[in-house]
Amino acid sequence: MGSVRGLVFWPPVVFLLSALAWSIADFDGFHAGVNDANRWILQNFDMAFSWASFGAVVLLAYVFFSPLGSVRIGGPDAKPILSRWNWFAITLCATIAIGILFWAAAEPMFHIKGPPSFSGAEPFSDQASVFALSSMFMHWTITPYALYSTPALAFALAYFNLGKSYSLSGPLSVVFGNAVSGRTGALIDAIGLYALVAGVAASLGAGVLTIAGGLGVSFGLEPTALLKFFIIVTIVLAFVVSSISGIQRGIKFLSDINIKVFIGLCAFVVVAGPFGDSIVLGGKAIVHYVTTFVPASLSLGERASDPWMRDWTVFYFANWLAWAPVTALFLGRISIGYTVREFLTVNLAAPAAFSGMWMIIFGGAAIALNAAEGGALVSALEKSGPETVVYTLFEALPFAGFVIAVFGVITFVSFVTAMDSNTHSIASLCMKNSSPSDESNPSNMSVKIFWGALVGAVAFVMTATTGIDGVRMLSNLGGLPGLFILIGAGASLIIMRLQLMATLANPKFT
Image (cartoon, rainbow, N blue to C red):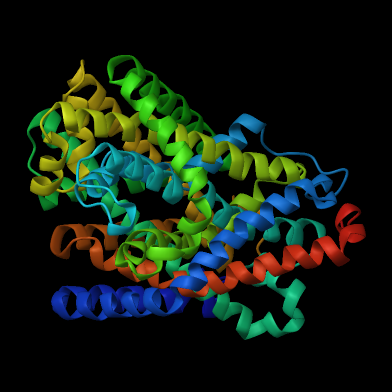
């Protein structure tokens, strides 16, 4: 791996391994320290997270309808490398598809049993149900995808149309010039890399718990360390095979399977579940979401003093911002050949709509079945953790054994797809003079396999010893630098719109 950027590659490796060692040696001290750091960030930058996230939504709406929307990424002669369907499937699976599998049924249970005071809802009331599903829309639809799309679009235009470097500092150089080159740019890349690697490790850990829970329900297997080790090794090996295949075969093939099974699961729950209740609740929740979008986004009124906002909404914003900068490299990379308006349709509007539909179907079914089954899903949450809630949901429906098996398999495939796409970004960021054509380079492949193995090792140690909360908190620390990268990316889009339209439309270096 002689062609790696040492200042980008080694700091995240050393920091992550040091944090892992600390968590094993003194988990209480580690958890307290990281939790205090997260609390300080959320308390001191909560309004910045809220306003920046809202600003991203407004900015992208403006960009969509502005003349910038007609600019083709890569120039007027650029050709797409993916069909629109494959582009959408990969985008969804590389971003929050894993999260909707895990949280769509579980998160509403938290909100219906303990709604915040500003909602005016009593626990388990109809009002609490509407608030719970509306909160899912806030946490999982338009705003998260705006946080991904802003740096991704800025990177795509900066790299393909302005000839900037293949790095996080590329779009920032539109605003700050050479001030973000050299060691400063390497530091920006290293921080973004660390946040994504820790986030992928935490996500993989959560996935392992979900898959282990499904194996327990289906086959009565205990979630032992050996079972978790087997699951992680299988995911990493599958990821290596997919990674060797490249975007055009590996990721594209897996994403296509993912989306089709997602649609099949939605259809099953619509037919077999309480869809009438879900659609009525979904309609009320959409109205609530739209009418409260501004105060909910900006923590206005009573929300400003309620700790629920920091514990949930702002925490989510920080989490998405930790992932978004480096994931943006991958999302920008696969967008060549399409216009900015098409980019925003496929990277924001379409996946947000799909996620919203998923939340209505699965979140609505979870809320309705919890009421019908005497609080069974909340009981599962309290007794066995959030990873068991979705299985409790399926157990209340026909063909539970088969559906749980399918859900376990698609969870596995989703994690392989996400690891593959994210390690593409990680490896590209680590390499000197990286470009989208380097994916088959042996050095690039070695770096991807190294990071995949490291992520797997961290996920195994954490799930087998101390749990995943610590590494998830470590990832969220990356939300603070991610906040400033988002602001810089937004500023670069504004400058591109106001000053660089001619160069963007007809790039001279291509």
